[in-house]
Image (tube, rainbow, N blue to C red):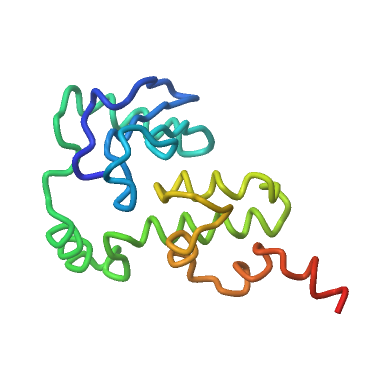
Length: 152
C-alpha cells in the first residue's frame, strides 16, 4: 500500500474501484503479470476509500512512511496501539475465512481470497494465505475437511 500511486486506480467511483497493484507478490517476482495485481473493490468501504483517494488529488506514494515507521505511529496512538502494519491484512484474512464458513463465499472461490490478499495461488488457499488467518477454528471449517472426515 505504501507505494500505491493515484495512477494505479484504474476505476475510481463511489460504488466501484479497480486497482492495479503493479507490484507482483513476493513469490512471483519473475512473473510480469499476475491475477493478484488487479483487484475490484466493492462493498461497504468503497465510498469511504473513494472519498479519501479523491481528497488526496494526484499522489505518487499513498503513505510515505516505511512499514516500521507506520507501525510506530500506530503504537504511539492509544486508539490504534493494538494494531501493527499487517493488522489490516490479518483482519481481512479472518473476515474472508469467516464469510467462507458462513457460505457467503463459495468454496469454488477460495482462490479469490488468496488473490485479494496478494498471494500467489497454485491451490485454493496457499500456505502463505493461511499464515495470515488468526482464527484457527474458522480456518479449519473453511478448509472443508469435514466433508471427508464425516465418512471415516
